[in-house]
Structures are given as C-alpha cells and as structure tokens.
Image (tube, rainbow, N blue to C red; front, side, top):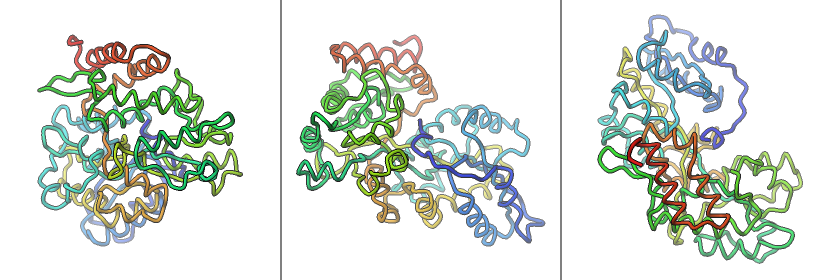
Length: 420
C-alpha cells in the first residue's frame, strides 16, 4: 500500500543510474559507499546533483547508488543484513513500517546519538520517526513522507454554498451532507479503506493494537476505537462507496473522474490520474487536510514514506552516517520534497512545500501522522486483514462492539499466536 502513496513514474534504469552516480572524475583512491535506494523514490536528476555535491564535499568518498525494486525487497535486505549479499550496502532505504522487521536480530546500527546530537530528532515527523525506533533506540532515520488528504471539487463546493474547506469533523459531515444529492455523491469512501479509518481511531485516542510489555493485542473494541468507526460509518454513508471493497476496487480515481463525486480521501497525486481520465476537471480540484476533532489541528493520518538504515556489517560506519546525514539534512531533504512532491522529514521544513496546495495539505496532516503498530508481525495482519472484514460487517448493519471484539481477537492471534 505504501507505494500507492508514492506512485510516481520515472524512467531511469538501475544500471544506468548506478553508473552515472558513481563515475565522477577524480574518483580514484576514494572509499566507495554503497547505497540502496528504491525505485521511484528520487529522480535521476536529484541523485546526480546530490552525488556530485556529496563527492565534492567528501573528497575521500565515492557513492555507488543502486536502485532496487520494491517487489521482493524484504528477503534481499535480510540477506544483506546477514552479510550474504555481494558488495553489500552501507545505507539502505526502507519503508517506514518495515524497520521493525529489520531490527530483529540486532543487525542494524543504533543511530540514537547522532539523532539526538546532530539531526534534530525532536522535529521529525512522528509517522516516520516512531516506526524507526525500538526500545527508545533510533535505527531508522526519517527521509520523506506522503499521506492522505481530502481531494475535492471546488466547483461543487461553491455550488453548495460552501465557501471554505471544513476544519473540523463535525463541519466536514455537515458539508458532505450538503454535497450529497441525487446526482452527486457527497464523498466516495470505500467500505474497507482501513488506513482512513485508522486516522479516525487515532484521533479519538484509540489504536489498532497496543503493546503491554512484549505482548501485542488488538484494540479495535476499545471505546475510543469504536467512536472512530462510528464516524467512519456516518461519513461513508454520504456516498455510494461499496461496503465490501477497498479504495482500489474499483480504483477511486476512476470513480472520481466520472464527475459525480464531490470528495475522496487520497494522496494529492491522484489528481493527475483523475484529470487524465476527465480533462474537464482540470483546475476544478482542490485539497485540504483531513479535518480533526477541533479546528486547532488537522486529523491524524496514516503516514507512508521511507527511513534510511545502516547495517551493522558496514565496513565504514562513519562514511555511511555521513551519507544519511546529508540525505536527511535540511538542504537535500527539502530539495527532494520539492522535486518529488513529498513532505520533508521535519515539521520545521513544511514551509518548503507551502507553494504546492496538495503537498501543503499533506504536510499539515503529517505533523500529526502515525504509522501502523511497530511490530514485524503486523505484515500478517495486512495479509489476512480482519480490519477490512470488521468494517464491512459494521457498514452492513452488524453490531459494532461484537464485530470489533471478533476483529481484535483475530489481530491478537496474528500478532501473538496463542493469546487470542
């Protein structure tokens, strides 16, 4: 799912990029730092500019940037961390929610001291920083983020007499009710969009699962989580989203492009796909942060993005740390954000994307973003997702508390077999 948040088309083949980034004049005698970055995370132009500057300011180092595919990356990273990869990496980009699975086994470098002393960790986006931690030690260093916002039809809002985007959930419901008519859906919200549900649950003070000691348990049946589900139910009813499918079935961009939907919850980049399908919607789309419970802060949203990690088996820790420091530092992090329409890794850098309406809306939400429970076993939950089944049951009339208890037991079984 995380890659859907960052669906950007680039054309550089990994072999070409690796060669281009590493073969600068004067490279002889330098120590090579091998960096694995993921496909589509950064443009070739950005990487060439970064490499040239880094090698100019680090005369003893040479960068060898190798582009990796997301498909199958987990086993490949695990093999590298075990020292089983030829020319293993010194720095690796990983999904923010993947750090937990790589921390197991003690094969990552603890970067807590650098984070506290040099890298301004207090300002990091929580949805990137928290998944990079384990027992208060920082292993994953935030790089960039993306998250959902409300994508809306400016013309339909104006027609309904809505002069400005809502800033509270109550106002959002009221506005959506105005927009919902016989010919227009107030909002298209698929019944199993559990990432959006998670934000409402977090806003209420609940969670999908919580850890007590070393044991994780599902907590969808808490009063706070049930309040989040109730808001989702009321909002989802103001459109015709299917109760038994997620936002990709059918793709919500295609539904929005029909011209009969006033709002969707998605990353801003989806607007490009909508306009390709329906060019008449060009200049009619706007963006605002998912509203919160009160007007003083936007709603909590799921934060996708990437962290950088350093394997313990690197043969030059200082060189690897220098690369991480440069990529995640203010200069190059804001450059990347502007280049790729990402959210920078710190709340204090949000002004760098203030000129882009969609990205600015993302940045406002990301300041209060969260990630899924930081446990390697969470992948099992997503693979056979009881949250989706729970949502469908509630939206089709089942008792929320009963279904929440059932889903919570299943999550517990998946996170801690034998305790469900």
